[in-house]
Image (cartoon, rainbow, N blue to C red; front, side, top):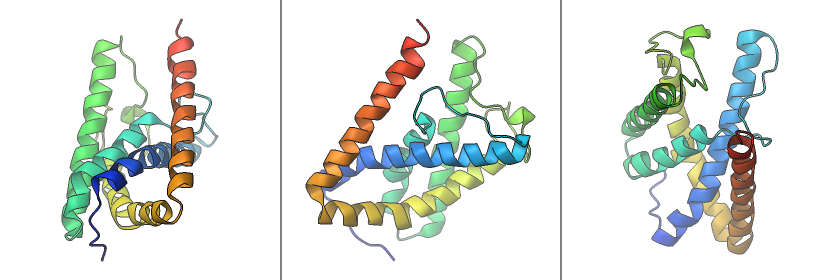
Length: 179
């Protein structure tokens, strides 16, 4: 089992890579899920790139809330599900309430939506996020740490460039389109 502690410098270096990894893996998940749900490929997200920001923030939350619990996988599972479930619930509610009924997802109209709360969250998503927490804590973070240790400059450069691309895409896709 992973028992490695991370220095502050290592942890900070991981944040951009974790965010981008989460955003991309979330986009892949949603692309596949909506293919299954609706029988066709549905373009998810507002940007040009293959990423969804909420999943990036979810991976960061998992790191912040569950990494220190890694000696107890059940707690990692629970902390991941609770923290990311709250992120999804609050984000969905805020978007709907304060942005003129905006819904970037709606569990009311999807398959496997048991435990649905207002279309903002459902048990399937929480179970997915909880499982993702196990993958992030026990596989992704150790992999990224090994890459960072082996290629420190290259790792920081690549993750920094990917974050810059992400920010440029957000500015173009979410902000400039609205003008």
